[in-house]
Length: 529
Image (cartoon, rainbow, N blue to C red; front, side, top):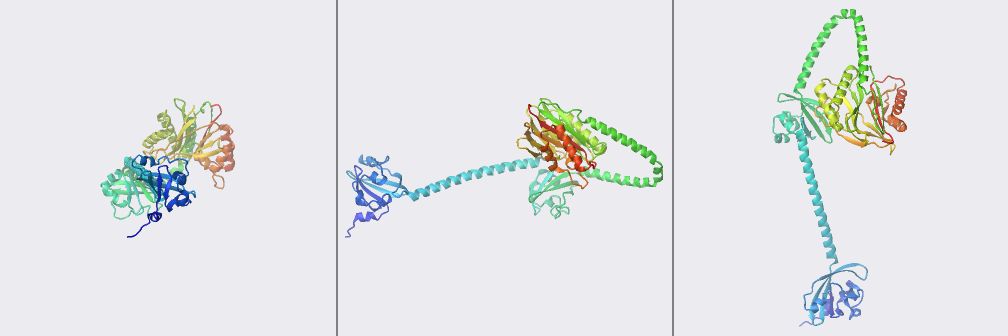
């Protein structure tokens, strides 16, 4: 029979074992007392357990000793405390009734377990939060993808987004209609399969990056393809130009006939020489007509600038020839709104002057009381596309201003950016919005921007003839010189700002004639507005 000394056995277990009487005095403790205190076993006998272990002056709040005295089941409790070295310890205490007035408390160090559980709980919460975020991002991506598909399939042109290996990344229903094949079938093909080919097209920007436009013949349709590079993709915008190409072929045929007639006219050179005098007189008539056109064009410009409380205005216009393609206008609307525009028609002379007059008439007839600049440009573009049958186009910057609040919204049809002088920072910012020029492409969407003019701020609108004015060394006047002058003269009135700038441009060009029309329109917010 083996004699086992149970007290020695208890000294070798990892828990702290205490035997306590009914007055909380320690009757026995094993060697694991070192979990919390550096005292020896003999030093703590007959001492209060809560004083020895936790340095308290009274029993712990959740102590189960009273429950055991009343013959009730003792619950496990947790102590969050510091040991004699100042380290945090998390302990779990289990209580047992031994005999009348004698109780057992077994204390286990669960610090590492608690730290691990807390860490795992924190990681689980983080993982859950990350899953929620990822799910929200996925939903947002899906929503944007659905929106993109709706937008892509709503445009009237065919659209292809092609990867470097000619794979189709995206296409719309219009492209499926052109190809005469199902959308799902095309999406698994190469881009050239869409045009009925088994190998890459000859005119392809993958082969030659300089190519930006090409023509394809598909299902008896002439398709004009416009190429744009976006990151690692080629974006193909496809239009059915069968009618346009037919018209171009007809024009070429007529041009061929015209050349034949010109050849015949050369045979009549002697008669033409005799008519030289008459032609000179005819030229004089043309010059006179040009002069009259220039006068008519000048009469279309505002005869006076607006008078709005708190604002100053200035304008300047000079054509490169007798008649030009630039213009500016001030359109008074209801509810104190004003529309201010500066525009530039491609080309010079009478054709440009005519298109300018048409554009001015459209602006005044159709955009009155349209206080959205982007919406107004969209309307003008649609009407010009239906009425201009030349290669000419119009660039325009349109600004709509509330004359009471100074709040402005603007849109640009491929025009030079507005130069905005911010008095609060003494700097000039280039302000613009995306949008193609007017009269060339149908169904163009124009971006709209906005700002509010504060006291001392200046909105400087102009045409490219100003910044592209050349000196004898073929150097352009440029933005840097213009911006420096605006900052230098910002305290002046608008007319004086324009006067000083034009004087500087003339000095820069050294008397060289302007090669392009120059138009300037300036708005300044004065005090008291």
